[in-house]
Figure 1 (tube, rainbow, N blue to C red):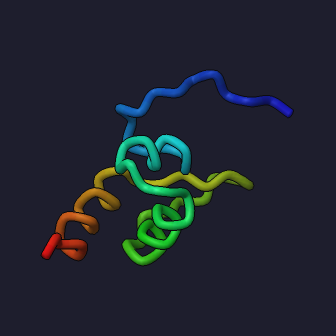
Figure 2: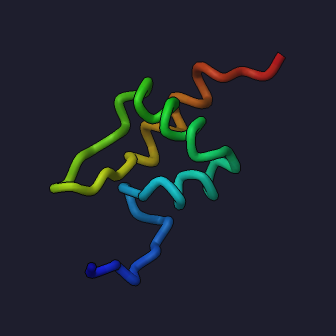
Length: 65
């Protein structure tokens, strides 16, 4: 398997682990939020998350009480 060594979290598309470290949330939570936000993009067999859409969705819909 060819694994990418490019781990740039400043890009527009990030993988699940990068999104977890950016948001400081768990894998299932990020996966559910990204799905609800419509931020998941499939590229072949890989899934990537649009970082800007995910962060905007969290800001708008996950307010602290």
